[in-house]
Amino acid sequence: MSRATTRQAPSVGAPLLAFDRVSFDYEGRVALDGASFEVRRGEAVALAGPNGCGKSTALRLAAGLAHPSRGTVTFDGDRIDAAALARQGFAKRFHQRVGLVFQDPDVQLFCPSVAEEVSFGPRQMGLPADEASRRTDDALRLFGLGDLADRAPYQLSGGERKKVALACVVSMAPELLLLDEPTAALDEDSEAEVAEFLRAYVAAGHSVLATTHDRSLVSALGAREVRLDKRHHVVLPPEPCPATRPAPPMRF
Ligand SMILES: Nc1ncnc2c1ncn2[C@@H]1O[C@H](COP(=O)(O)OP(=O)(O)OP(=O)(O)O)[C@@H](O)[C@H]1O
Ligand SMILES: [Mg+2]
Image (tube, rainbow, N blue to C red; front, top):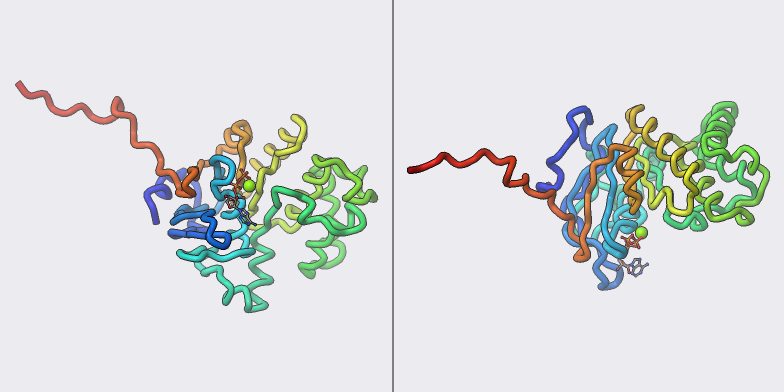
């Protein structure tokens, strides 16, 4: 594990997601190069960096939608690779425990109505009907979507679609919530509501890994920042400022 993983808040728990020297390329175009970082239980981590540095790619790898060309991704101690996800029981459990909200909500929405969209996950999880319906109602209310429940997702605005995508994943209450630019396209009030929800979600012991260019979200969440650079490397945390180092002994 790289030195970038060593700064931890004291109250967070054991590592839940770990990238160990992960590289990935799209047919030769490098997207991640030897990236190491981790997300602990009950921790919020903001994945930051310039356009094209590999943030969305890292989330796809964390969600098991793609696999490293080198290095390993582990979740709760289990290596996430094609062999693990080919085991049906493992894959089902993994997809219940880890949820990804895509940068572009259209990738994720496919049901004829918002209510069906949000209830899809809880129903797939095999929850009793009343529990699935409670989770759906909670998620709709949480993101202010009650009035849109009967609407077709493709007829909604970009910000409304983003909130539906968030509600869909949150309704499954994943232990690790992966968010790709969660506040992009949201107005100020919605942005504040999402930040408030995420803060409570983390305080309840869940983990969040969010890519974002939104500084106010990072500070509202109290998130630890992991930064990628243009070369697709994790940037190490800065060395302590020289002024804070003990002064060398004086010699006469
Ligand atoms: N499907 C793809 N095929 C080929 N190259 C891709 C593909 N998706 C991403 N890339 C390339 O991989 C690199 C990392 O892309 P990625 O989408 O992970 O960046 P990002 O950090 O999320 O950027 P942004 O801030 O713009 O969302 C970029 O150089 C991008 O052009
Ligand atoms: Mg991206």
